[in-house]
Amino acid sequence: MMNNFPYEVMMERQDALERLDLKVYWGNYEIRVLRFHLITFPSGKMVSFHKHAEYEFHFIPRGKGLVILEDDPFSLREGMFYLTGPDVMHYQEADAQESMDELCLHVDIVNLADKENKGKSPRQGADPWELAEAHDCMEKLKRLPLKPVMDMHRAMPFFLEAYQASQMKYAGLYTTIKHSVIQILLRAVRAYESEPMEALLPSRDMKAYRYQLALEYIQANSAGEVILDDVADKLHISTRQLQRIIKELGDGRSFSEILEDIRLKAVRRRLLESKESIDTIASLEGFSSGSYLHTVFRKRIGMTPTEYRNMNVNI
Image 1: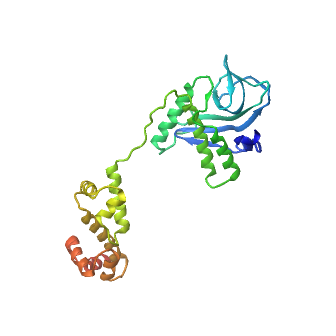
Image 2: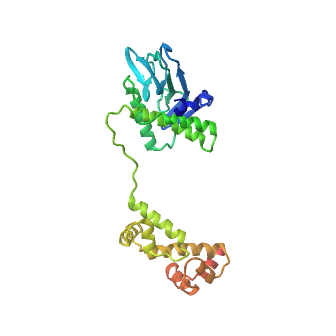
């Protein structure tokens, strides 16, 4: 029934996405959107043999029909997808008794890293993982077989997501549309993979990552009471494991030494940037008293807080 067709809303403004000057940059590729819409082929409608210089992604959200790719005819039904172009001769026909809807994404893809593309240059500073995934997707597009497959990875909903973003005009709509285009390409390619491909993801050096998180927590809370057990609990690791990480990555310093270094750095900054008393600074930066700060400061810095302030303020 018509009311159960989720893409019906796209009929209200069929050219909504095509009115946008969409150039999506992904990895080293510029993806220029030429057509991006939902169209209905009335029953018996035929589109004679033609070809494009660019890629055209065809998805069938409803109905049935026929497509001929070069010389091979294929039946089409709801939920199927096929790719044409560049230069793929094809013919389309809706069923004689039933209309056929088609979600179409027609794009021109330019490799900015190709030296033959005068006036264009590769993107500088692009994420290497994004570069690799975009390149892999584009290379697979070139080798996709000329036959329809089921939209197993649900690329079609991204047509609707892009359309709704363009109409609702909420914050981040351009990014939503950009990601929708990329998802359609990715999921279209994935539909032809007979077996799931194991993909790599960027991984962290967990030891360095936890050490950095520990430092950030200590710095944020150094003015108050900071206990090793609390930091370990925040990182969801044991205190023994945290001690080993700190010892290894903290230049041999212990937890208490790192905490003291952070507090002393804050004290030195206050001594130079304010006229607060030593007792006040001690209280603000986590030392139990001015006299204790005096003792620690002299031992670690080689002079009293007052001497440090006078020496540096007079420079």
